[in-house]
Image (cartoon, rainbow, N blue to C red; front, side, top):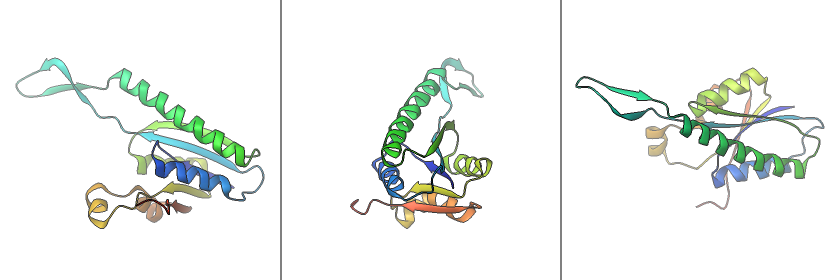
Length: 153
């Protein structure tokens, strides 16, 4: 079985990691753990004109996002391996829109299942912000498991 596990540093994500670790997966299942970060163009001081502002992507911010993503993934690997040593785990830290990048990774990986978490947003928040889990559930070509923390308020 090929699984894409999309995570970040939230408590909701930690619940998803622990729950996936408890599942009785077939031996030699493959899990691709993905962390997606978004970076925005920041104005660069001193590069302003009357008609436009020039932007650049700060290399240091991108480097820090990669380091944080690697740390999040390392912690997830440790939790999953404690539960199931036979898992074949690959990882990916990517920049972009989470719902788009997760879907693309699932398709390129040939995933049978995408595992994500839900914050339990209300309808108004979903309308304004969009829901990654809802998007994946409707757009993915494979099954999507949306995990929630039953104790979250």
